[in-house]
Length: 151
Image 1 (cartoon, rainbow, N blue to C red):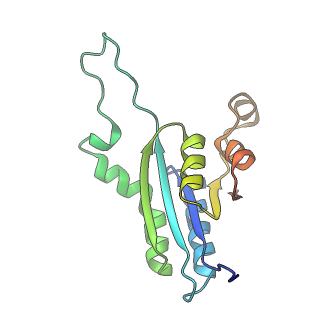
Image 2: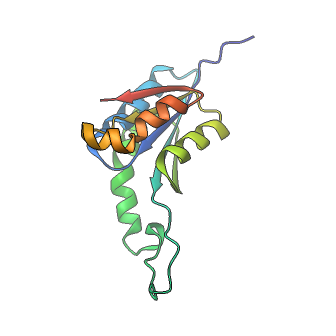
């Protein structure tokens, strides 16, 4: 059996400084596999699920991806990962999905047989993390592949 040295790396991004660090680390990991065994990075942005409009919402807000400023927002959020991948000559696929962050990351990783998930530590304070259970903690405890939490 041949050892597969190319990796499929999923990095969760949201435009925060932690996610930018995770993006750079994911690209660095991919680049480390060298040119013979190209690793591919999938950068995933999870947007909150669209609320179901109630009867009081005559004008429900359109999903983020349909707003006029979406392209600008998308560019800003994906800027670091796209720049890092370009500079390191690492193949990159950008994904934008709606849903609950941890669930979407986990199901994408499983469906696409990712080798590693790279995620920023959601440093949102001890109390809040204890109440909500951070996305990174949930991903780390439930993923079937390796999880790399970047601090």
